[in-house]
Length: 336
Image 1 (tube, rainbow, N blue to C red):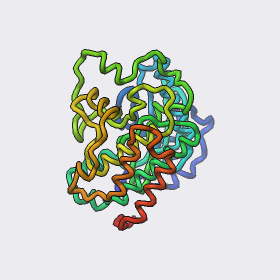
Image 2 (cartoon, helix red, strand yellow; image 1 turned 90 degrees about the vertical axis):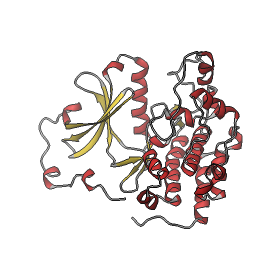
Image 3 (cartoon, rainbow, N blue to C red; image 1 turned 180 degrees about the vertical axis):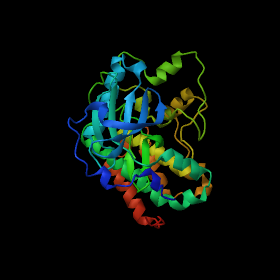
Image 4 (tube, rainbow, N blue to C red; image 1 turned 135 degrees about the vertical axis):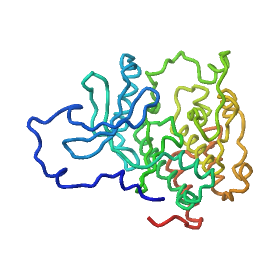
């Protein structure tokens, strides 16, 4: 894949040697040259220039219309602080947390040029030759393994991600693999005070509503989270552990192999029923033309076991299984 060198500004003396201004700007006053990147859900992302360090960073803001919502503020700060405290090569560094000139919450983090894994998978599903050359199975397993290292690190610190999906794995231009979006992370073994303990589970809510549900769409715009939820998440079990993330990573691995989600239904409700009750069609049956190695299929199916006790007991065990398989596969990764 061609390198997008324009995404990385050149380092020049005028950006490294000037003295610091006196007084030094604080808060958002230190940032300039804002460029909107994306707006999704309740947040907005900008790239901006940090005038003190001389680098481009990403600023994430909570949109003003959600600033009065106490739960949304706490959820936003949780994402910022969990991300900041999980200092691992496969998580994104957070530089600054604060309020802007209007009193709205923001945090800044490292900018990484690249794309999310879902965009890569879409091109692979279209048989894009350049993408197939750059991302053979060995490279795809590398991405899963390295994202899982971030999970293992988080689990060791008592944090469950709860929103594993290809859109939340960022692949950089220099082989960086970053696990993003810790906004719904949960501290393992503790009640989440952002949730209502009397609330219905996602599955029960769908059973009781008469509102029509939008169908899930294949390989396009999609509500990604329901597709990757574990049975215990769907059932609303209050004390989930690291094995719920392992289930979601198994779903991701399955989709990477077969280019189909294993539990997709016509609606979210049907998808939830399949997650709870149905065994997935094995990837090699789902996509016989893909020449999926049986050992890789076995990893995905074990990770997606309905009973958490039948899954890998830890992210490190899941990683070891992938590494063992990689030793048996021909290494067709392109040279960097």
